Picture 1: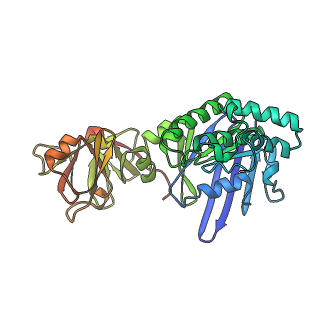
Picture 2 (picture 1 turned 30 degrees about the vertical axis):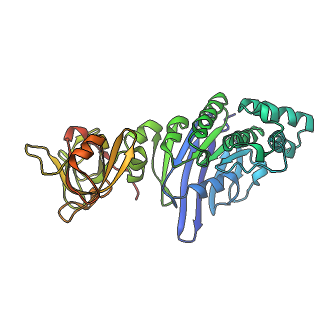
Picture 3 (picture 1 turned 60 degrees about the vertical axis):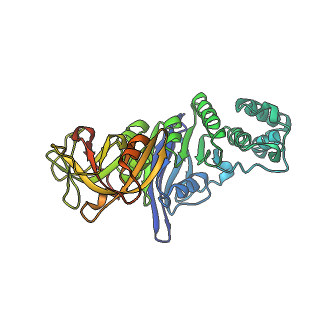
Length: 366
């Protein structure tokens, strides 16, 4: 029997409304991304049983968790939750924390202890069984919390920013551990909420992007991050995105400016579309370049940010440039930044070859 997750829910909170249809087959990991206030936390609360939707249904396999007549309480849902705060019971040892779930479901003490120790071993914490949370590092506590979430053998696992509170040394190890555990256990549906595209790339099979309570973009992880259709997704993927409508050789932006590019799929003139390019494809000149580059946009340097071995130059619009230039990024070497003497306020021209610009349909919605 399939134990995949099916949810079609509507929730109103003041002026905000969440209307989402989400299907996660057993064995699949779906990352839910979106800006603050897009509805990610509301969706997780509904799935966990902390919030009842105004209408809709939540089902796991053949079990109905929520509909107009049913509202299964959280402890009976077989839904595990791992958040950025481990929320371990401070007065219990690690093994007792993990055994708490099985014990609360009626499993005997000896059996629950054996299950807890097996899961602690699974998350590489067998030697920490007797420690209390105060004696654990952040990464160790999150590993124990993961073991606790999985010890009840949930059909659905909810991961709510699980690595956000970890330091830069602990996060990769815990992320790798979660990946291993999820791949080894193929029977559960997993929903991951994160602001970090690396989490989605490492863990998720698919991405769902929320905006203003609705799904505006979804698809296989690498496809969504390599071909974003919304400004939010482009930003987290580290790409520049310009919205507009399709033209014969690219797009026209709302202010009428042309952006030349290469269509990756058939487009009809006037159809909503986006032009996307890598910051590394953006050249910066102090004076307007000679020759025939088709994409030249005046701008002003807004900020300089370290970006690995490069410097990311953020730009803003000038009175002579289109407004969408604000927020575009260019990646330059430190030597190039020094040679151009770039600093906030420097007037520049951005140049992008048309062959570096991909054009494809824009996502529906905001």
